[in-house]
Image (cartoon, rainbow, N blue to C red; front, top):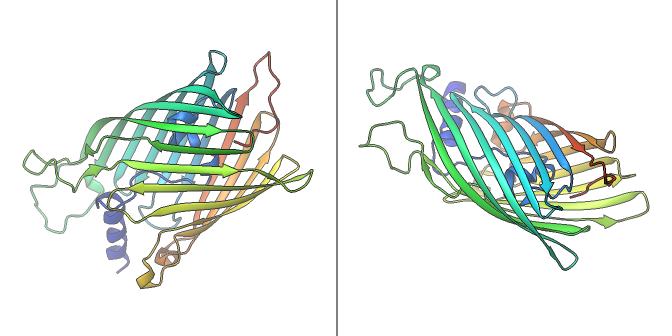
Amino acid sequence: MKKVFIVAVFLQLCLGISAQQEAQYTQFMFNKLALNPAYAGSTEVACVSCLHRSQWVGLEGAPVSQLLNFQIPIFSDRVGLGASVSHDVIGPTNSWKLSTMYSYRLPVSNGTLAIGLQGSLRNYQIKWSETSATHSGDQLIPGAESTKVIPNFGAGLYYNTSKYYVGLSVPSLIRSDLNFNDATYSNTDYGREESHGYLMAGVLFDLSNSIKLKPAILMKYASNTPFDMDLNLSFIFFEKLWLGATYRLGGNSKESGGFGESLDFVLQYQLAKALKAGVAYDVTLSKLKDYNSGTFEVMLEYCINRNDQRLTNPRFF
């Protein structure tokens, strides 16, 4: 029964049109570049960050993701450039994605409005040797492995002030064909890379001279999927220590007793003016909780100070 359950989970994650195909990160409030190309350059200095996520630890074939981001503002901060390399493994699937971002930043009122564009190439691979066919000798199943290179493009808007931000983006606008079968079975809805839309927002409150409160929200949309959302509440102590919790919708349907996908905890620390580290742990709330030991993330960010500018400590957005 456990093997049957694992196969069912894999099919829902990788093959079904109703699946959330893009990798999700609990520390989304520090990973805006991968979600919205308009964020490129918003840090006002060159920054590089890396993130690792192991989801549903202990469940065979569960998602494992790595991400490397780089961004830099140029032309007096009016233009932002960014690049992102991501790696995702789910069961027998292995995906590498290279994205480049461009943003044009306009002073508006008390903040900055950025318009962003993104181009990407995804190398998508399935290792069929790691699967077991229900009917042996099925001619529709390819050989040892199959690989596709998939181009895509996206766009986004991002507005921020010193006290709040809001962003809207669709990183992949093209519904690419992921089918490895011949033309007779291609161009169907069984193997599509769906477009994902993101709406993000956050605000900063000063509770005292040493404590700040920062709520943040990330809404996620893909066609033929249930509504999904992350709600985060973080406290910032002495502008160095971040403690937060996130509630993620999803998981089982209400009819089956579901009340969310996970409850997540985030800890970050400003090690120096240019260096920040963070960890996160997700407690699974759905029925998958009986088959895994939770999810963990680690994150590291380094910002390169320019010679003519002191780096603000820290950047809250």
